[in-house]
Image (cartoon, rainbow, N blue to C red; front, side):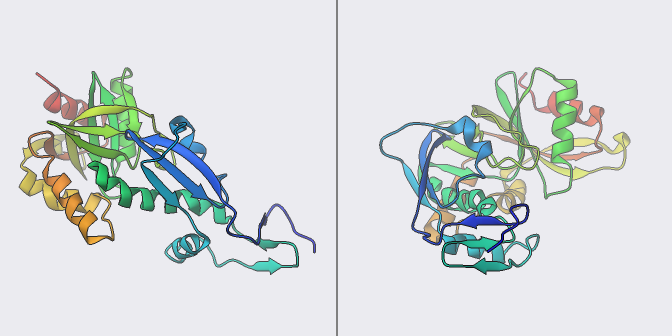
Length: 270
């Protein structure tokens, strides 16, 4: 059978074949057993070598099929089969990191660590996070921050982990980092979370500190919510544990250098 390799990927019929990948993320040893394994380029900074994992994640074809059904941006496949191979018109393997992320986020709760939707940048030993629904401008604020403070380091551009330890909340780099690929395998004390919404001009810019009570509904929407009820309860507890460890600000801002400088000057250590 003729297969056009520009539109099709040939996969083994035996889906029990596994490829084992080992990573250390947020101080947790994670083993991912996957079927395809070639969509994990952003994971290269987290490669580790350990004997026993803290978390073992198994990605199955059923998991991938379920993920595909939830993705409106991927068309239905046309499947071609002969005696030796199966070909499909889209890349099953591209969905493996997303499946692995969800399974990792479910399991890592046991290590007082949760996945969060936000962009995090480090300056002078502290991490600052911008969080908002997709499309509001987190990436733009990170670019503006780097323009103003080029000595800063991006921790993660989209989905960092937050680890609660002692009296601190730690922002942790992760390979799930958005289309820009912004991530570093570092862990930095989280000083402030900016709840971002848009302003039309610099005259409207404001940074207002708010309580955990006022911030909590927004934080819950931005945190990964596990399916397991016990893990969900633990996530809520971890979010509440941010109180006293992190400052929360409502950041009403235009996408300008002046707005980002106002955010840093408000939240930086004195």
